[in-house]
Picture 1 (cartoon, rainbow, N blue to C red):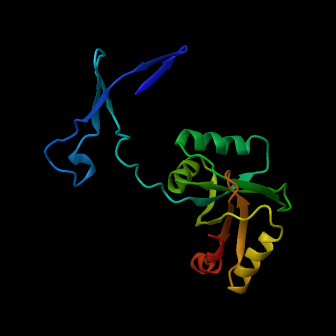
Picture 2 (cartoon, one colour):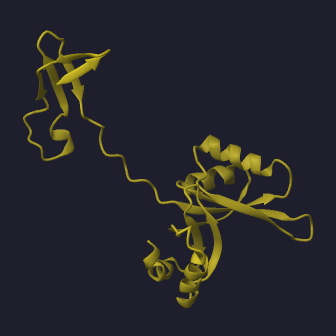
Picture 3 (cartoon, one colour):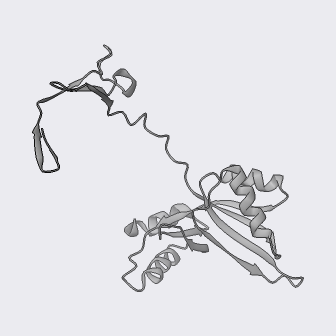
Length: 191
């Protein structure tokens, strides 16, 4: 190993020894350690690990959370505060005011990973959850005009109705549709 410091080169013979044999083979992650010891003459040993920990649990699928809010200042802030307190993060979404003849109602759709926790927190706060729906997500070629038309036409030709559309924070198109299995088949080319 060659190490350069301020125009000086130092050569070391380094030995790296795996010390992870726990005597149980390597059949699964817990059967062995990823600990190692690196040694070089005249230097203290360095003990380390290549262990990144157990594989993370699979992420929950994302879902559309539809909510009705009062059309007044602070309504969205209250929703956001409740979600923050519940540990729910918004990963995309949008909203609009619907004219109901008495001042309007705001309908918001948010992409979340833990929709059940979100719905419980909102219900506890007296905020109306309109529904939790499966989403279809796909990435369109942003440099190619007409992608939305092509995707929408493929869905329409398959008899699928798009009920809500927005994008996530990673530029993926998010669709809430009336027939998710048919939608997945119709847009397989964009996956």
